Length: 165
Image (cartoon, rainbow, N blue to C red; front, side, top):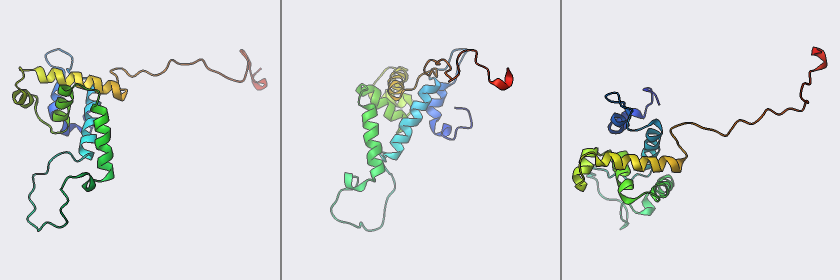
């Protein structure tokens, strides 16, 4: 999660919340940033962002709507399904803010203005959503594995090979 991370420039709005400020710890922890990266990757693979380019060539094809399920690749459909499952357990506001920030790369002030929320509220809703998603993904602030087991061997206690006795 260092500075050499190639995904870090894409996360510029969120990275500001991940830096300690004024002697205070960072608002977002590393497991939150990893959650943002996962959601962002799923969003990009799902092709949910609208394209703003114009095609001047003639339209080729039948009457099928652009953007229908038949038009997207299997990988995009799978990514949409995974993203929907991941966001399914979140409250609507949390899911909306997470998608707006991670997928559409909206700023927190823009989200607050669009929804008529008080200042700094989107930041809290984002963190609540990222906490819930991190838990669903099995990410936590501290890496912890299973308790270490005792060492097992086929020799009895105090056994020494004959070469060393």
